[in-house]
Length: 70
Image (cartoon, rainbow, N blue to C red):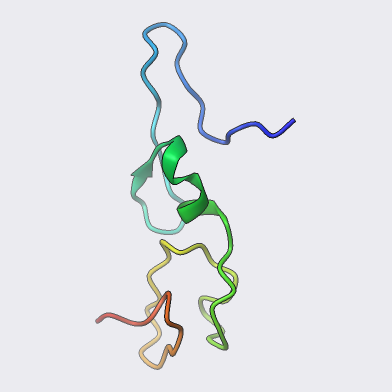
């Protein structure tokens, strides 16, 4: 019952790559976890429980995963 959230086309066996809701990057089945699984990263109120691909825009973010890179 664990189905992928990324649909595939059956006509020519190419995969449809959907854009991520958090970063906008298109991803395939091999990157699902990075774009959908929440990362328990720390005390930042902006990026708590967001996936690893999320780019925190809070200047004082202290999370190792989502750290502000502005």
